[in-house]
Length: 292
Ligand SMILES: [Zn+2]
Ligand SMILES: [Zn+2]
Image (tube, rainbow, N blue to C red; front, side, top):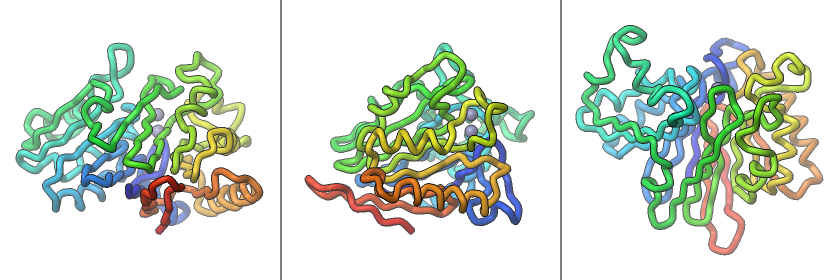
């Protein structure tokens, strides 16, 4: 499994000299599975660069959408494969009868908010409301999803490929003031033993209490989850648009101190555009992990 980060920022794109190293594009992560299947987690502005690479292939593209907020969908109209005739794109929407638009990716391509209408696109795009585990599952691949605690709802995903695994949990408030969709204990079970946990860590204690209830977690809460669930590596994701590179460097240093004498996670990283994590399956052993 190879995980590549194309957009790591939350809320709104934030280009500029203070954010250039970690990157200003919004949520998009590519997961290349061992059997050659492509999974894309979210379609924020980071998906534009990824689209240029995928346009050179003719692979089927599977998109798992966490939810329909702008920072998770806005790159899709600029995703080159949607303009390729007969390209098959399967979008697993986060919507259901109780939550949000049917397919936020297509609904924004309406001729008014964007000059093209989704119905005029030449690609064969499908919006699928079923649980992705039923359709994506191959012999060695499993996808599970669980509801996030976030205004408007949505899903987090756990992907298992042979003996390696990752969890993608963005826009999730571990301790919200509103009714929980998923309890802390359920999160610990969902993440239990995963090789790579990618989790929303938008806020610091200094953001509180003002932003309590906005749908995101504190770095300190995510560290605790990583320890309680004994994950292999933790990747902090969905950085606040006002968090500068030097502030994220400070979070990285604090993480290294925090986890220094802790058995798991063995590694903690702040997500950056271009970060690539290669998880190699090893039978009956911990997965080996290379970071570029
Ligand atoms: Zn977001
Ligand atoms: Zn959101």
